[in-house]
Length: 241
Image (cartoon, rainbow, N blue to C red; front, side, top):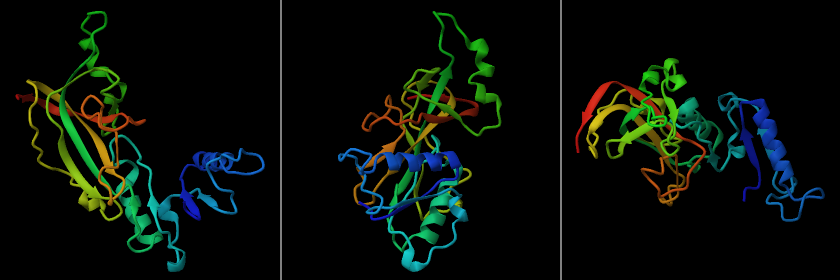
């Protein structure tokens, strides 16, 4: 395990909660001897409540050996993930420090989406106002293909949108526009694109993966707390196998 850890969290309540969780799980006079974490004097943890870009450059002798980042949302790119990881690695870590997760891929499918029937009754009259976020200015909607929230019929096989090396990739490496080719799996009219992330946690072992891929499409990996991201197509697209 690490001899010392520094965590950076922008939201004060989450930063304080993380300190309480660590304290409750350290071995000591008020916790069981089976507690998973070492005492504070053996493995100190500091939590800085700030944006990581506000952390001044660390002197070379005190730079960190490993960078571990959370994934921000179901889309895979939320909250400036690419920029934050690049800054943290360049300014706060030793040269060549490993990054966890190491790589990020975005994959997606085209879907034909309808409102689910209610006791056999067609409810598509509510389509313009479902889901509620559809009328907002958000770039994408949160969905979960495994929960059956809406009638999502997957029409294509997964296609890769992009692949990036985290900690090295810059925002300019994220294309603003790309031509994608989907292989049809079922006939239908696609009106939504649904995508998810797949992160390779280690460069040494490509099999160690964290993904929010729907289990109905990829059941090789454990489920996560995330659903998937979806966006409505400007116009319907006819799909054939």
